[in-house]
Image (cartoon, rainbow, N blue to C red; front, side, top):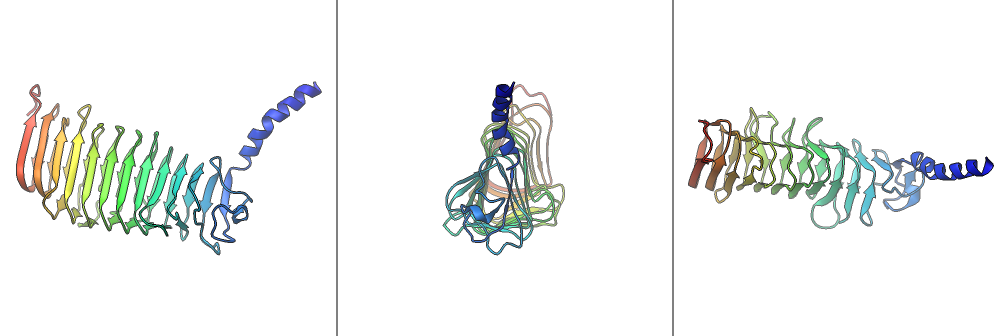
Length: 308
């Protein structure tokens, strides 16, 4: 009996230790992420830890290498320097009224592998390269306020989770915005009903060759792209594709939409080199109140489509 009890205790100890070592809070004696005494409880966070950075620490964390944690939260007034390294969260990434810097060159590299992440009312000093895998969902500017990106932004949806970018508030990208979906899922971009304003000071590119419902633009309040517009979508499974109240200012871009189901083009002011919609299936199309300037235009139903 004693032998069995000791064996059971030995089995449980690793799990018990993990359970009680989940939360790690930054206290910032120095700025080095990899220093155990900068964390409470003492110890460098690992993939089993939920990590939280809050205002009030004497120093802000600075990565000295790639980091993988269980989840990552930055609270109001907090800062992080990624220092040219990638931060990966196996769960959510929640940033609220925070500042993310990169003392090296290029955008901040962040990846989430699960859960629903939120980026709210934060500043990304050198832009952002954000990847979501698995079933991870990203909600951007859905509450609190818009985000400001002072550099190029790339969002890669490499999993089935939904993307909601500029949902409640209209964020500002001071650079190019590139959104790519490599696994099918729902994508909602610029759906904020804020008054007409510039959302991207450079070019906007959206690539989706794997399907899923796409909505670009708002029901009220135009979204302005200061640069060129590039849309390349192959709507596998014939989902709805909606492009509404979007304005771009520089010609040379291209819009190519293949095999959509229901197709909506509403209240847009677009200047592109070419605009192509082919293979539309199922539901009707709504094309209304647009001002389109293009070098070439093609709209074509799927040969078997009997809708009007």
